[in-house]
Amino acid sequence: ILDFLFDVAQKEKRYVNSEKYLTQITEIKKELYGETSPEYHLSKIRLASYYLDYTNKLDEAQKIFEESYLKIVSPEIGPWQKDLAMLYEFTDKYALASATLDDASDVARSKFSDKDSNYGIELDHIAQLQIKLGQYEKAELNISKALTILEEYRKDNRIIGDYVHAIET
Image (cartoon, rainbow, N blue to C red; front, side):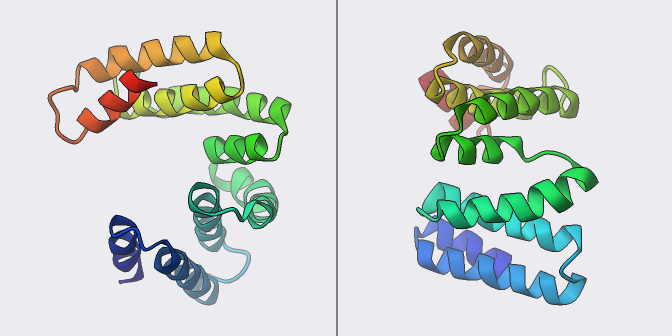
C-alpha cells in the first residue's frame, strides 16, 4: 500500500509525503528482513536516490550509499552506478563520477540487448551525466546509440517520452 501511496504522492508532486512513505517502507523492511538484509539496504538506496533527485540531503544520501551500497548491496547484487555517479558529481568528486559512469555503461551493455529500449534509455541517462562532467565525446557516442535504438520504438506510447528526452539531450 505504501508503494502505491508513494507513486500517487509523486504524481501529485507531494514530495514531503513521498519521502515519508519511502521512510516508512524502509523501516518496515528493516523490521521484516533485518538490518543486514539486502532487501532493507535496497530500500535505503531507493531513499538515497530520492534524496538526490528531490532534496538537498546530499550528506544523508552519501552516508546511505557508503553504508548500504558499497558495503552490503554491491557485493551481493550489482550496481546502482548512475545514482552513485550523480552523488559523486554533486559532491565534486568528478574523477570518481567518471569512473562510475564507465562502469554503469558496461553494466547496461551486459544487462540489456543492443536493441532493447531500456538499453537506449540507460545510454541517454549516462550521456546526460557525461555532459555535466564535460565528457562530450563519450556523451555524443552514447546519445547517438540511444537515438538509434529508441528510433525503433518511437511509435510506442510507453517509450515516446524517453525518445523525446534523448533527442533533447
